Image (cartoon, rainbow, N blue to C red; front, side, top):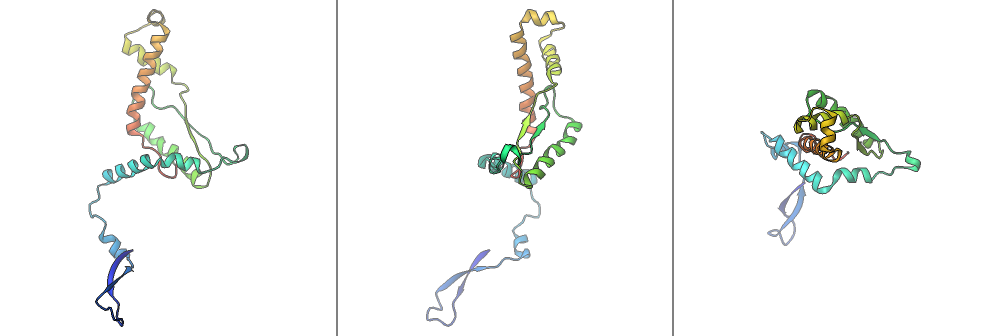
Length: 174
């Protein structure tokens, strides 16, 4: 509602205005909408608000898990892209990984997302071997398991940071 100031007829103070709410209509609301909205900018503002407000975490925490987790819907997501950036196949299935938990959240369930790293050992190791110029298990042993694991972790985290720019945080309904 917007407000407009109107003279109050029939009073001694007709010159003095009284502010009253002025009803809005779809036409007046539409007048405030840009004919050429910049959707990426709008999305960035919304995402920044959700991040600042911690909307996602709040949406999870405001729903009780219930007795023995009876109201929980646990969604185990596969690992982030441990050895490369996403391609169309990853993004295509991403909508399911978003819509199913959102639907369960809207039904009142407590839905936590849990990301795993299962089955990504070999691809991460192959990536690290390539980066380090290693060819055999003996090369790895010569370098040292601890150093090799550090290289694997660094490779995985590099892609994980890049992926964070591609994967949007869940919206307010989680």
